[in-house]
Structure formats: structure tokens, C-alpha cells
Image 1: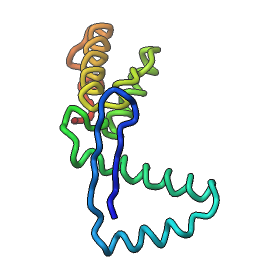
Image 2 (image 1 turned 135 degrees about the horizontal axis):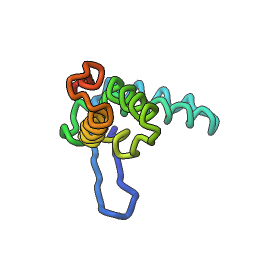
Image 3 (image 1 turned 90 degrees about the vertical axis):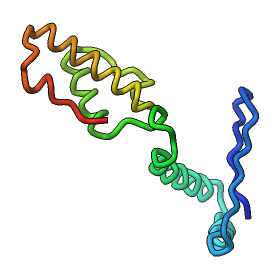
Image 4 (image 1 turned 90 degrees about the horizontal axis):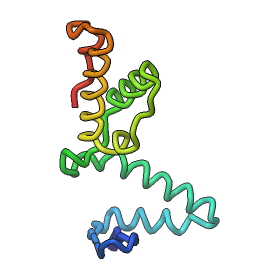
Length: 126
């Protein structure tokens, strides 16, 4: 059994095919045989996607990894204080989140006129 990821965006042709060991293949086949309805298949697909999203950061280049939960929470806290939106890219890429946080902390410090304010300096690590 092979697991394939195909890029259907039309931007490029990418086919990442992974050979699934027999022990996993048997379990996957058994599960797929139990998916009788579109709703069953949808739940299975969503579950696979959730698990894939969790582990993607383990094998992506650092600039492509998603932001940490702490970064996202801090970004929404700053955004609320500053009455702005968190940029979409910052919610997708850790590097974009870091740039967003650094820029908003600098603005926060300038507006407060106190660069030594502890709560402004505390931000989650990348």
C-alpha cells in the first residue's frame, strides 16, 4: 500500500508517495472497508488531517512550521489591546508570527513610552 499526497493547486506537479508498511496497511484497509457513508469518510478524512497537522512541524523547515499555541494566544492578546487583526500569515507560519509579535511589541513599547515595562517584554519563545 502506498500513501500519496498530490498537489492539485496547478502551481506545480508534486507527488509525494510513501510506502506504508504491511502492518499499518492491513489496519488502514480494515478501517477503509468500514467507511460506508460519505459522513463516515468525511470524519475519517478530518481525523487524518488533524493528526497530520499536529506532526507536520516535526519535519517542516523552521520557517514553515506553524506558530506555537502560546504565540497565537499572545498575538490575540496584543491584537485585542491594540485593536488590530492578527495577520493570516502569522497564524500559519511561525516566522511570520515572530515578525508580527516583534513589531507589535515594539509599537506597544513606543506607545507606552517605557521599554522596560515587564509585561511588554514578555513574549513566548519561537
